[in-house]
Length: 263
Image (cartoon, rainbow, N blue to C red; front, side, top):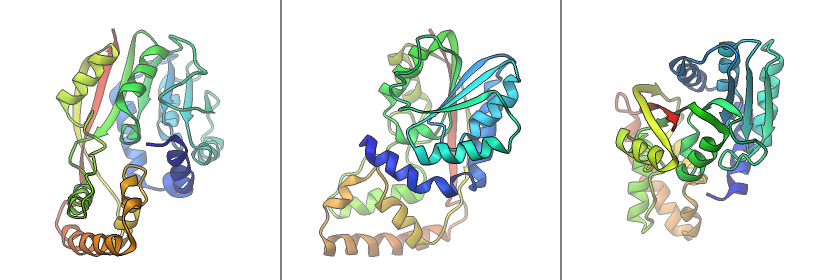
């Protein structure tokens, strides 16, 4: 995905991002499972509005330090707003690409956490950057939705194929135990454990879901369609999505919490 497109996409989503209840619960679960110790130095990579950073700051206490890094200035403004009301003094935010982290030295952190960010990051460069900034034996924890989910995204890719577009599942690299193990090993990590979970997403109408996928930075190929082709794609998708959204559990999202150590 193009860096500038991703930044603009999240700038546009920033104002309502922290208001999605599932994000906050998902972040808390990752931090609780990580088992951070008081005094640790933690990086919240692809921090968004800092939900992991706030939970991690409480876990490591006043002797610890948490840095939230995100590419989106809009997200970081929201993160600072939430921090102002949290009563915490051990969190700082920086604008940085989570797949580079050029401003951080080798071994700067005891733990790196990333909640839901793998959906928007190339696994290889991200894991390599996180490996570098972790101390030897440091903890990496990230959450990833399982490949093939959410169902509305799978349906979008299926409908796109009928329009001649071959769209890739963005979770193909780490959306399962074995995929994660391979990606981690290639970056120099030893997988420690995985924990399965389920997140219930919030959603709007089928038309809303269409719009969210049609402008997603995952699928720039959609822009190559002519007006008539795009209209046919939209009509086909919305019709099928309406039926899908009526099914129980359509927005239950299977997720994986992955924990590894820097070898």
